[in-house]
Amino acid sequence: MGSQILLPLATHFVEPGQRGRTIGNIMGGLLSGIMLSRPVANAMAAAFGWRAVFWVSAVVMMLAGLGLARVLPVQAPTRRMSYGSLLRSIMHLLVQYRTLRVRIACHGLVFAVFNMFWTAIPLLLHAQFGFSQSKIALFALAGAGGALAAPLAGRLADAGLTRPATLSAIALVGATSLTSGWAVAAGWIIVLAVLALLLDGGVQTNQVISQRVVYSLNDTARGRLNAAYMGGVFVCGALGSSCGAALYSIAGWWGFAIAGTLMCLASLALFAATNGRHAAS
Image (cartoon, rainbow, N blue to C red):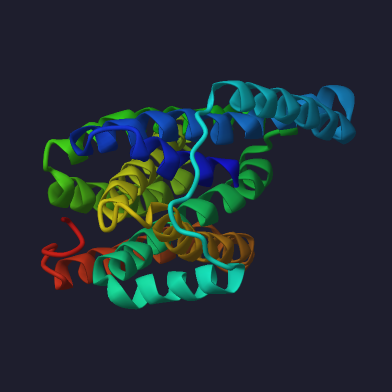
């Protein structure tokens, strides 16, 4: 959750024209850590046992906390609110800003596809390709490359290309989801790794652009806007994780490929239905 505090805080200290770049740079580092944590954790568990992952994580988090305590400026809120009032104000923001609702829905569908993919892919790699835990960890490195799209996405948003970048990112996720069905059927593991990289790149691009748009809605409520946005997106992602393994066990990889494509088409249709006038601002 610390990252969800750092992102709106960082945008407070930069000019509006550099918000996309700032969000992209932070998200690039954050997403690289998330994606790299999978293969690192798998390799660590294979070498030293699963408990080692938690011990190392605890030490790293303590060091990160000490570092942040030294470098972050003191920032006091200008408005004091009770916890209940904060929660009610978040719901008010959801009602007030149509852009916020559209961005949650559009990216929530894409993020659900992302989680479906990465929940089901280890099962596929083991069952169809005979991958061991260490080989699955190496495959996950392909996904880490997608985080490189985050800084570029921020620059596209700052350049006023929010609408075309959003449409392209969602379309890319849908296209890679569908193409992965043929790659798996043909046994093309290298192609599947490239598709994983492209899928992750599309998801991260849409995430950064959406955050840039959401943070621009109200400069005095960025933290609460971020709470509403990320809360909705994480709910969709959790549903995607829950459905990923079940869908693969019931319908195989084509079940994911078709479901992921349809979900991205739904996201595109929703975004197009708003004409991008509000959601691409």
